[in-house]
Image (cartoon, rainbow, N blue to C red; front, side, top):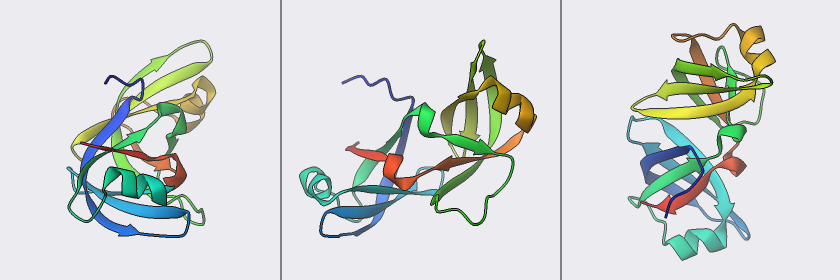
Length: 139
């Protein structure tokens, strides 16, 4: 199956914290960084997720925000440091590719944000992703 989701990060489940309706799943990415997904308990069961399961963390590029450094005082669990490798700018939006510990992520942000943050190839950034925006699939 092909997907339009640009960010497909391979990893291994570190832990699953079950809940009545939702669960949190911590995934160790191949590059060593950790990402947390908040998914339904039903999805955990349907996918058979447990510690050691091989998965892919899926994130739409429109759900990846960028900052020029770590951000404190926010509820966003996933903050992945990386380096901008490429920027393609259109009339209103830009596609920013970021190398993060052995993987590449794509962020779709406004052209104005690229300018205001001073982003260019080689810039250090932090990719910010809410745990509710991370989906999981079996690898």
